[in-house]
Length: 290
Image (cartoon, rainbow, N blue to C red; front, side):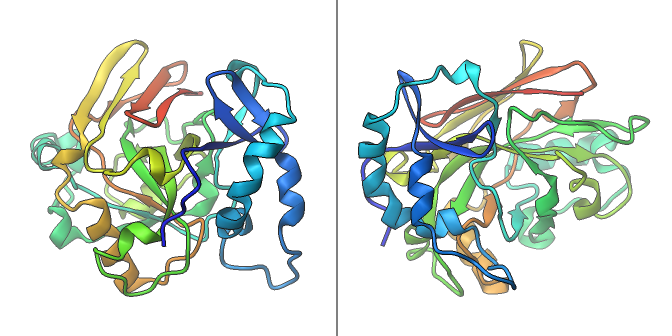
């Protein structure tokens, strides 16, 4: 069953505090973490907070009412998922991006570019994950480093070989994702997995707010210039199909992250740039490039 407890935006901030986000700001609900089960070695394959989220959601509103709001711009936003077991990403999942990648040698770098049915999905290292407040630290500055804004799906329960019809019940929530990438001849996973090359934020928005993830506008601006401006209705494989396909190869665990693909308009960023990524019904996040 999907997580049902009303619309909620859940963030992680500063020194691993947990908060509920509203128009007034962030209300600290870190006390609910006391309910998490104690773990021993070997550590679990999942994120314990996301695994317990279904049980914790009913307690969060009361905890939030006891806290004073903190302005969002006064905290350092971390990734709302602390410990994903894996980050699964969908390449070339927008038709116009496929056309763009085939036409621009700076993107494909001589690599064979196929649409997603042939390319399959790939993995990004969990160590690449940061929140918007941590920023992106570029490496290999002699190469082109690109932004790719994406709808990110956070898995909420263990799932294996689920159907597309069953997939919505596996979702804990949605975030904005930045699949940063170094262009070059190597395999995608290597070029897309340096530290800080997966930005997730600004918070986790529960599924109640997003009944149809295939009906969302998404965009990114760099230094105020619009680079990508598209709509998830243009996804080749929709969210339920991606979850079903991913679960046919891997067991999905709570906290696993699925990046659904980026639209056309990808472009390079350089140290000193400021990215503003936005997705309808989720929000926006500012990410500094250093």
